[in-house]
Every structure is written in C-alpha cells, then in structure tokens.
Amino acid sequence: MTISLSIRFWLLLVPLIPSLIVTIFNLYYFLCNRALRIALNNHVIIILLFYGLVEEITDISWQIHFYRTGNVLSSTPAFCLTYVFVGPYLTTSLKMLMGWASIERHILVFHRNWFGTRKKRVLFHYFPLFMCMIWPMIFYFVIFIILPCNIPFNYNIYQCNRYGCLQGDPAILLVDSIVNYIMSPFIIVIFSVTLLVRVLYHRHRINQRIDWRNYRKMIVQLLALSFLYLVFQLPQVIMYVAYSAGLSRSIGGSYYNDSFFLIYYVTLLTPFVTVMSLPDLQTKCRNVILFWQRRRLLPPEMIIMKRRNALQTDALAPMTP
Image (cartoon, rainbow, N blue to C red; front, side, top):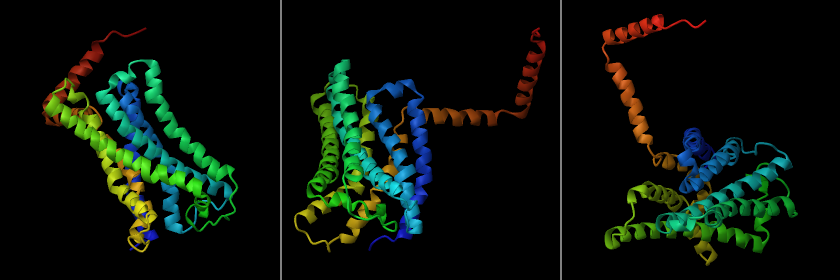
C-alpha cells in the first residue's frame, strides 16, 4: 500500500528538526577543532554533513510543503527549475561521496602512504572529492537547465513534472541509472563489507602491526553509514534491476514507489550516526555532567564560604588608577 501524502508529511517533519540540530552540532564540532578539521578521514564526513544540511533546508523542506498542500512552494518556472535540479544533484552527490568514503577507508587503513606527499593527497584525496561534487552538478545542470524540454510545468506534481525531462532521453536515463542504482549502492556495500573482512583477517590471522584503536571509530562509522544505505536503498536497487530484467511492475510496485520517499531517511539519520562516533564527545559530556553533580553535592555552608572568600579577595585587590 502506497504511503499517503499526509503520512509522508509527518514522517518527514518529525525527524527533520532534531536532524537539523544534530547536523549543525556535528559541523560545529568538526570545524571548531583544528585536529578534526584537518584529518583526511573527516573531510568526506564534513562534506556529507554539509550537503545533508543543504538537502534538509531545501529539497526535504520543499517536499514537506508539497505533501502538506499538494502544490510546490512557488508556482514559478524559476523555482521549478531549481527544485528539479537541487534534489537529484544533492542525492547523487551524497551517494557518490559515500561510495568514495567506503573506498578511501581502505586506503587510510592499509595504504596510508598513498597520502604521504602533497601531490598524492591531491590525486587520491582531494580530486575524488571534487569530482563527487562537481560531476553531478554539471550533469544535472545540463539536463534540467541547458537542454530544451517540451514537458510543461505542472505545479501540482512532484518537482513540477520536470523530472520527466531526464527520463525522455534513453542515453541520459542510462547514465543516471548506472550512477544512482548500480555503481554507488554496490560500491558502498561491496567496499564496506570487504573492509570489515580485511580488518578481521589482518587482525586475527596476519597480526599485522596496525594500531586498530586509531581506526576503530572510523571503520565503525563507515559500517553504520553503509547500513543506512543498505536498509533504505539496496531493496530499491534490487527491484530496479529486476524490473529492468523484465519483472512485472505489479510485483512490489507500491513499495518501489515508496522507496523514493524512504531514501530521505538516509540524510535524516546520517547526523545521528555521525554524532555517536565523534571523538572524545562521551568524555566531554561525562565531565560536564560530573561537574554539575559535584556542584550540586557541595553543602550550602561550603558554597557560602567560597563566595565569601571570593568577595574578600576582590576587596583586597589593588585598585587601578
């Protein structure tokens, strides 16, 4: 049974606010700490969080308005072109970034010397990140903005009915399908599973001298994020491949249509997975809690004595001219 628009509205609105808050907290935590900010393994996570924040503010918020009213936010061609461009661009970029993250974790753990020089870092670290961001932007900008499309704007349909401009060209649709439904999902799953297998093999069989404590959170973080894609996207990919092979659309058609909506939960849940793997966060929270507990456990006479000593110290301090 297809999920109704009213239920979709609440299913997106309820997790959106806490997801925004946690996303901003994650970005603040990463960007305000220089050690975390310059660490190579954190760059793709920071970009994922930033792109997710943009998607929550734009595409997901616009979807919530559409599910509530049945109309797009602004009934203008300019907004519709922005709407149809932003959604696929951000979604594809996030999938490609996550795919690259699953590959890069192998390099960071087992081939860290690949990042030993500045040229190597540019080639094996910054260039792939740049391509994951710029290629989808160019691809969808050309399709939705540059190329002519005869499909009229319809402000009562998802993305103003302009997504059909992509589906009208078999070659463009093939490229889009390969990237979104084959390459990115399978790269995420395959490289995440093989990373886990390699880690277990090297740790228990080869006893290679690797300080696994330095990589444990990074590996767990990748596996947790990959699990989100496994749950919310892999069934959609399998059904897409089955339909392309000739399976009747009447089999699982309702779930397949709903899966395009459920993919938003990858973006909404990513901040919560990331915040659990932030370094030293548990220690800092524990110190704050213990600090307030110690203050509350002090007897009243001790608090009064400390305040009195502080006032006496201020009174005895020399006056500045």
